[in-house]
Length: 223
Image (cartoon, rainbow, N blue to C red):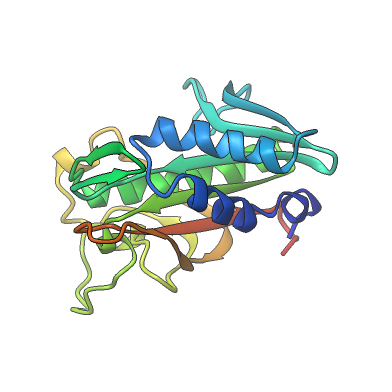
């Protein structure tokens, strides 16, 4: 683990955030609230949102990093995803209506792409370490259906205990509609074993269980 990640302790930050904000309206809401929680926990850290990347992971493309933190022990780049299943709930008098987003294959590709991008940001010096954070109430992301079949999106599955490493590419049966804009194979240089943890539970709400995936990214040669 990198010292900057140790200092931040993102697991503790997420646990504290879950008490204050067990559910979010959108990914942008999650982004803002995570940034505020970092500020509450580390008031001296510089917190920046949507920072332009000088050396994009795909040359010629414009890229931004969701959250860029500057701490006393280094800079940390964070990418976020908030894929949701249908949910209607009232929390402390506030109504939350989340859509069933579906398109899990596409979203899973985008999560793996975020891992690839943050590795690139660390490698090129934008950040000293990084993380990809996924918060979701859609159990299809962490639960392996157990049928054992290889699918077009097998390389991008985020199931519990899956290891992401090496070149990740669509299977030959992937349709053009699924891969459009996401054709590139993704080279994951690190080795990341996925471990989902409980984030929050909205009592009495269908699909009210939220879980969180935290993927830490450090420079090559660090663990």
